[in-house]
Length: 514
Image 1 (tube, rainbow, N blue to C red):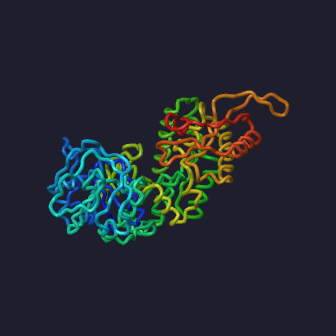
Image 2: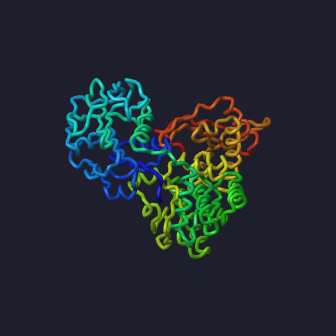
Image 3: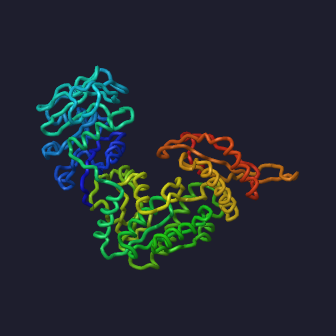
């Protein structure tokens, strides 16, 4: 899919790769992470405005270390090397890299020697974040020093005639306060970017690309009501209309009113061709008596595949399967190098679908991060209720019920869950915490209600703060809010007489209980 301007991030194994890509996109310039050994021909096909060589854990003189192809420096495209990327560039162009006697890690004061171009608008000295065990000890021909620290003579180097720059520190991290300005200077002063990429331009390009690729064939999409599948469905519908059929499977494990909301939103508001499948009975029958959480997940996944397969066969011939795959998934699967052939390709076992279900895959969001998907959803007219909703697990309420899954236990948890979300939203905490939900425990406790003894269910409340779900800390919700939630649950939901609050973090615990 052609883009007005793109900057490529060559991946040398840095833990900050995604952060570099994010910083570029924050400047409204599209970025893409590609393998470190991308060829010059592949780069020409993409026609980027600039290249950024990422950091990485390797030493340039070590065995089997990642190195860029030397011909990329002959393309006439500006290059910014960050940490290891700077060392790799210096080494490939005839300079020398030396192992440091002491690794430099952490905060450092950078003295700027040249205030033009990449350092335009900055003070004489700035704080930067170092993390390196090697350093450039001899500059390649044509390079000059434009910044130094007390420990690193060549902290920033440049060959301005060719547009090559190297920084030994990490401008992409928050610990380099002026790092965003440095990246912006590279993008706009050196690469000549205009900053025209936005959710609106992405939608226009995607719609044209989907039309061109799908042509007259039909597309089927599994719609869950979550952020990713919802945005993908609305975007594809904008492109091809009735050629798209969405299948929404009610597995009986959804939140209160979820099925009705999905049908109303996508049928009435967006006029999407939606097929609703009530498979609650099949799922509950398959889950009867199952206690082990992994078995629950496998059964739910298997039943979903069977239900999806049955409904897809009723539709008839379908050429494409749509999925809401996001960019972090692509990066983590080591298939970052994109282009049209990677954006839409043939898959025979996508998401666990049976081998005999042969679709070509369309993934319109595969080059977006989660917050960008939300921006696209907003631009497409999706409500905040959908695009800003907290993560909800694929197996639904089944993994928030510890023990046996029954219709009665699901209905009880649905009522509890509705109260929790209502109070969290009223108190203004819904968008402040990563997730907030209730868990039905497999025990009963003694209580007193109306001067009578009760022996009823226990509910655990869980609320966590997180950035990406990989780690999480329990949320310090106000006691008054916890009290209101507890009182409402016990008073309004028959069968519950005790509420507890989970104050464990991840790790060692997980966010979900199962």
